[in-house]
Image 1 (tube, rainbow, N blue to C red):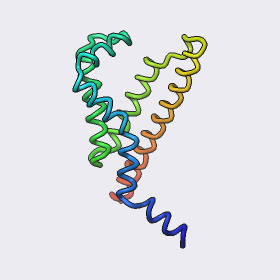
Image 2 (image 1 turned 120 degrees about the vertical axis):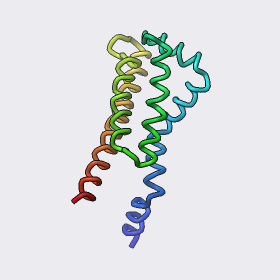
Image 3 (image 1 turned 90 degrees about the horizontal axis):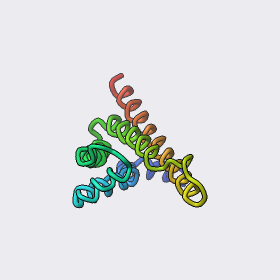
Length: 139
């Protein structure tokens, strides 16, 4: 009985949506923060050597917010998840180059790098699940 109740709760649409919101929360927060302080967003792009900085900041905002909204709305969820997986992989290679660091900086960047690789995996699972569900529904 307890297992059945637990499976029912985990299978609820609300719990699923909240889990997706949690997965997207850093991207929504990051995109909105960059949009509200575009000057700092441009400075962040310059810090990482990305040019032209203003268009890169704009693209980052669009990706973080747009792909998150696709995931949360369920419309092309798989595409939003794959976009955020690719974005996260690229951003983590740019921002967490632990192999070029030493000491505590290397330690912290290594942890951040592999935490972000975990996010890439989570987004890939979201895409796989969504595409698998669509395939079953079409059959």
